[in-house]
Image (cartoon, rainbow, N blue to C red):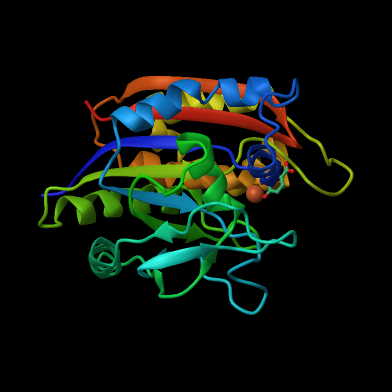
Length: 280
Ligand code: DHB
Ligand code: FE
């Protein structure tokens, strides 16, 4: 049987990808950001899974106002980095895992979660920046990745509770897959940030750190937090954090082992948060 061994949580911003692609990671602005991922890159080498289920949001690159799936699972064999306006990032294409992805779709849809199935899409910074942070500059990503895209860009967005329960359904799906795969689930986006309007630049360190504490210790009650609180406290783009609850919901019920925790402000307009939790 397949099993989920660990979950990884990390913010994304396009500028992190650009800093890596343009060789700026040692500049004074970026050095403290990347220092927070040095442990993680070694951990990734030591704990390379067979597959990553990578929960992220698309930013109107694969999807658009014409088509807005709340939850979409990638069942394709591969995904190309998206052109977000400056040309595609010079990073490897993402190899999928159609068999496990189709199994998760089957199991989760039969469990009453209406996933959209995507057989062709490009993946934007929401997916490639977390891979870059965790894996560094690579010729190829270390394992197949199943993209799980969540709409947190156009309202209405899914609730934290719905995300948490989807994570639990994904756990059940993975644990019923008949092959001995080591699977990680990653939750990405966040932490506090707001990119537009009078509150542009908003950061809320206290709220972010309390979110990290609660994600570790009391995720089921954290899942009750309504989306309005994310927006009020963590800014309009802080709502990306609901995606972390999918990864956390996929973990076992026993308290996780906290392997790494990092928080830094700022990266571009965003507070960077990062956790590695292992199942015990
Ligand atoms: C930034 C953050 C995001 O989440 C995003 O999708 C785009 C930009 C930023 O802080 O620059
Ligand atoms: Fe974003």
